Each structure stands twice: as C-alpha cells, then as structure tokens.
Image (cartoon, rainbow, N blue to C red; front, side, top):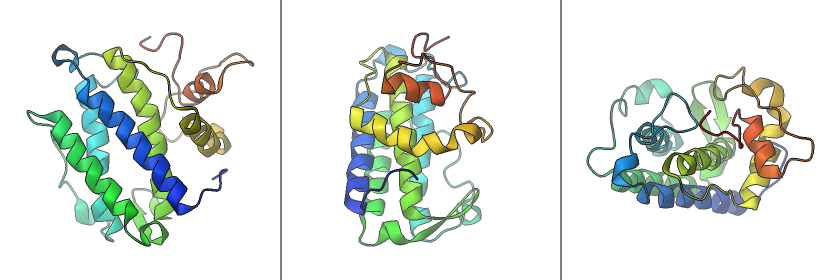
Length: 199
C-alpha cells in the first residue's frame, strides 16, 4: 500500500468509485446490456453482475463470515429485471458495512487469506475504478476517470506490477509510451489498451 489515507478519506474514495459506477449502470441503454466490454469474457450485463456480486459479499465478510460460510449464497444471476436497482441495493449495503464505526480495523477472511478490512476496501475501490472504465467503454459513455481515483489506483497497483497478471485478476500489462498520461498508464498496468479498448 503506497498511499497513506486515513479511514475517512478511504471511505470517500470508495463511495465515489461506487457512485460513479452506479451512474453508469443507470445510463446503460436497453440495447447495450449484451454489448462487449474491454473484459473480453464479459458483456455489459455480466460486468455489472460481477461488480454486484462482489458488493453482496461485503456485509457478510465484515461481519466475520468466512468464504466457506458464505459459500454459494450469491452464485448465479443476480440482476433480474432491474439491474440498476439490484446494483444500488448491493452497493449501498457494501458502503454502509465499510462505514460502520471501526469496520476498517477489523480482519476479514478473503479467498487468499486474512486481511485488514481497510486493505479489502482499497482492493474494492481499485476494482470499481477500473471496471467503471470498462463499463463506460461498453456503453459508449465518457470514459475519463477522476484524476484522484487514477492517482489512488496507480499508487495501490504500482508496487504489484510484476504480480498483477500472475494473480489472474488482470490481463498482461499493455506497454504505453513513456510520456503517457496517468489514466493511460493505469489502464496499461491492468492490461487495457486505451487506444483500442475493445481490441
């Protein structure tokens, strides 16, 4: 973790990332739910489903549940006939769970082991930032990322450059020009080609 943020600053960044993603979800045209995204395995609907699934886990994990205890509770299609409403409910619950007094100082059980909840919140914030760009590209919306969010994500991911692709969470890094702007550098780091986002 390269950036020192107090709990309140982290919660603000997390909330802004979820709010931005939510605005994009509410802006998805009816004919774009099956459109491709820069995540080559996911359509727009599948991408929103993935982020929603991640939010659904947050209250349980912050309450002390293990991955095994949650099990398959949230497996399967979650979005139903009103994806925006389902996303909003899941995101609101996740934000409320992280925002409980002392929540970020708890220890949570994640798929790779135990971690402080503040670290989990950082991961979730970066994920929402990056996937917000994916969703914007998928629906043809403005894909500019807030500069503060870009700076945060670069600071979080920069020390992990060599391990990102190996983790399976991101594609291989895309080479970018030495003078690339911060957003382009971030996208390249997580395997996205800003110049050719859909391949």
